[in-house]
Every structure is written in C-alpha cells, then in structure tokens.
Image (tube, rainbow, N blue to C red; front, side, top):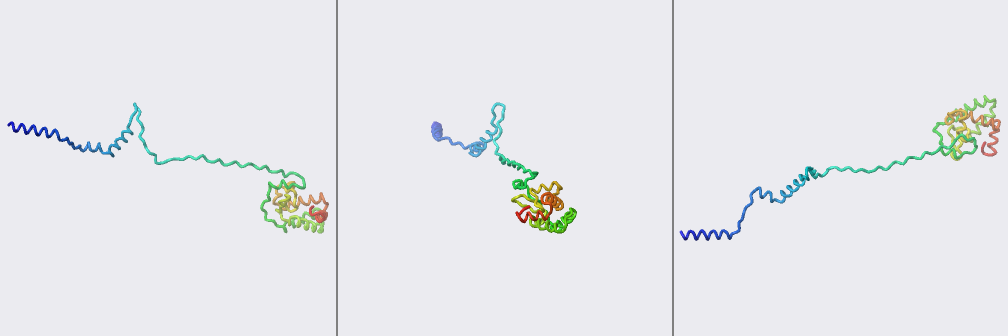
Length: 206
C-alpha cells in the first residue's frame, strides 16, 4: 500500500514537470486563422457605430464620372456691310463686301433685248453697232461680269453695280434691267452709244 502511494506521488510529480499541450478546437482554430481574422476585422469596421449613427460601409465605386468644362465657341464678329448707295464713279472699297451671284449668261439674248430698247429710243442700227462694241469690250455682254478690282458689275459695268437698283431690284440677274439702266446712263452722259464708244476708245473707259 505504501509502495502504491509512493508510485502515485512520483507520477504526479512527473506530470507536473511536463508542459501542458492543448489542441485548439475547430472554432478556436478558425478564429486564429489570419484570413478569418482579416475578414472579421473588415466586417467589424464596416459595422462600427459611433453613438447612434452607423458608419456607412466602405464601398469601392465601379464607375467614375469626369467633368470637363467645355471651351466656349467664340462668337463671330459681324462685318459691317459697306454702303452701295454712293454715286461715286470709283468705289472699290464697297465691292469688298459683295460678290456676284451665279447666273448663266446669254449674250445673244441680251443683245436682242438691247436692240429692241435702242430702237425704242429712236437710235438706228449704227448706234446699236456702237453699243455692241462698247459692252463687248466692257463685259462680253455677260449679266454677271464682275470687276473685282473696281467693283463694276453687269453688262454695262455699273460702278457700283447697285446703282442699277434704281431701275429694278433684280439688277444682279436680269439683263433687261441692266440694259435699261446702261442706256439711260449713256444717253444722259454721252448722248448716244457711239458717243460713249468714242470716249471708251480714247480713254479705255466710259
């Protein structure tokens, strides 16, 4: 009996000298796993509360909007149109704001119209011949003939062309309007087409 007691005492002492080794449970192992600890920390951070206000969870936006202030389109500066009402014989500055319209000229038809108007004024064929030569030299009898350097326009080369508006608003495109104005100008300044032709031959213009 005494021997048994001694053996038990020796065993107790030996057991106290051996370090205790404990094996964690599955739940404990999960709690100690680094990834589990990280996930738990993130979840706790997202659920963290200050007082009664819950802090919103941290979320990463998948879409971003970029706002770029548009460059304003410059407002065009209006160009003042020069007056075409001047009666000056030289107005090249007024021609810079005007360009002739597209017109399909018909010199033959224009000359036929002019012939009737010449006869109506009491001028004979010789005067008509002078007129044909004069306006052939000036414009080739083209209704849209335009001299960019001087601004003269039309069959009679009115300077500026807008002078012919005194006869009709269609002065840019209608040969009859241009011819009527041209004949009136010739009669008032030179008397007859042959008088105008003579002046043109001497100085190069009429």
